[in-house]
Length: 165
Length: 186
Image 1 (spheres, rainbow over the protein chains, first blue to last red):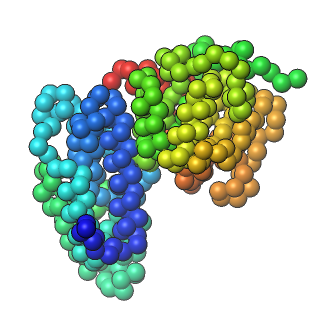
Image 2: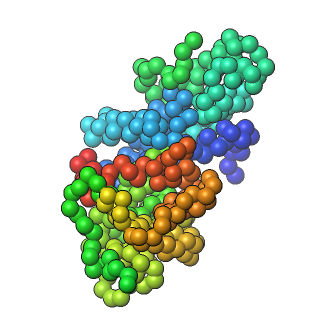
Image 3: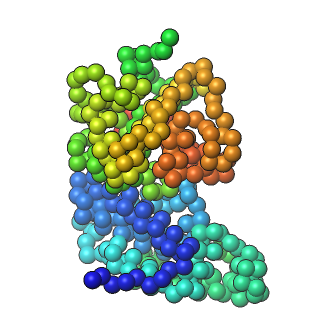
């Protein structure tokens, strides 16, 4: 009997389904390209961790979302070919970490990173002042970055899009 | 009189005004079915990162063609062989699958699309011949060209002013040859 997953907020569950579909597609295409399905899985896991480390990219469908995926995948493929991509996080373990994200962070991630709400819109939604909304958004992004870092995301991930004061 | 596109074959002459594509669009679980049956499948991740394009590279077309008359809906297409029709029909047990062909030069051309799901054709073969009026999108998610309507079966949605074809990034390259070359160059 498997372990039951905690209930996820609907928007967060939808986001998790989207990143799962991305992992499946990246794993397949890269696995065929490398002639090594296990390597494809490793590349896909690296891509997923890299995406979550900069989660505001999820507000997009095409560029820069697809561009970010291409960059992460090409870097990981180069590491595979150089024999450097070994022993990293698996998608299964990373996904398990994503389903344990607290509901408060789930909600903030969906509004700030998937729907693309700015601080003013978040404050209006939460009926709080803008500084409080910004602080809450910062805590969620920090949580997601730390989660990604714990699964192997690079430390320097660059500035967060739309993340000014 | 209907033009015999199969006899003409794809025009591979380079032109900045020309767009041509022959290929399969599906989720990875469906494309995997093709990969298991040919070593010449070259899947490319499309924008949105959930679907893949398998361009009909010459090696793939040659690898999987079979002699004999085309089966429905293959006779509405240039490169859709009997073998590919059978494989895509079977693959659709794993999810919706689109086969498309299009060729335009200077705004003049044609396009065809067909969709299978659960081993049945659920759309098409839908052909827009040169000279036919281009179908307008009457409202979001309705109407449009054969390829746009086919892509909706895969869950693709228009994004702002970009229709389903553009949103999926199918304009990244301008020919099947370029899609195949990009894969080979990696």
